[in-house]
Length: 316
Image 1 (tube, rainbow, N blue to C red):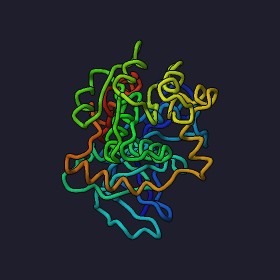
Image 2: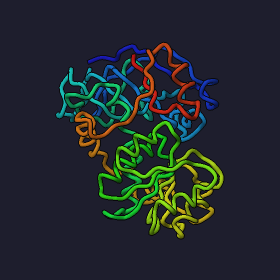
Image 3: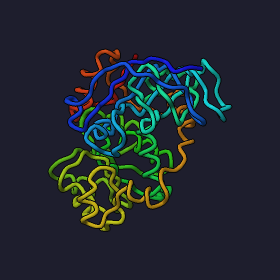
Image 4: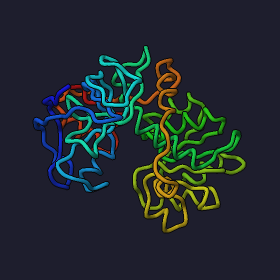
């Protein structure tokens, strides 16, 4: 094995993504122990990529963006015995210890699973971060079959996934969403209502017996947590992934706080099961657009727009 040259999108200083990101050539090393190297077939963009640029999880610079990856195995580190060179896998790029991440021709992965037959690289690449966030947060909520769950912000991709996961666990789901995905969410089995004025009363009418849990996956917006507390009647029955400060100030729960207090992020082995469901057409994360690598700036602009209506994917 030997290091290889790769295009990569990286930032050398913290700031607004489109101001600090640049495309450049980097040398990607051999994978270390417990890592693999892949030739990237697809990389999904996430809001977390833009927060990294703004200073979230600070680390050594320069660093790359792109957490979600699907690619063909190019090299294998010591201690890895579950893949072979040439296998198509999806997983998470090691964006902390490497000179680049998933938005590159070559990436080092620290978590991977086989892409099942029937699932293309782009649809596999968008699964990891969305599903990890949804599943880990729903696990914290300890939802029981038959309970009523409100997913606030189900038009976003974490919410879209969370609706499907919660329904699969036997919960009754009410979702707030705009018109883009309302019919999809209803087809899954959720009751759907719009955001905005009157949302509390509309949810209560749909619940007809109360809401046991509220999962806030909406974009940061003042008042979201207060409305969910009003619906559930108890701040401890509200968990957010986004409106952190408001939740902390009102006694509601923040998913990342509880995950870190419990020792960090749990296993993500469930990703293999959901990939199989996606291959069979029984689970989906919408891909709104794919872009060739050199159009990464247009892809970033769409993702940063706040309402891309699906996942944005780069295809080197």
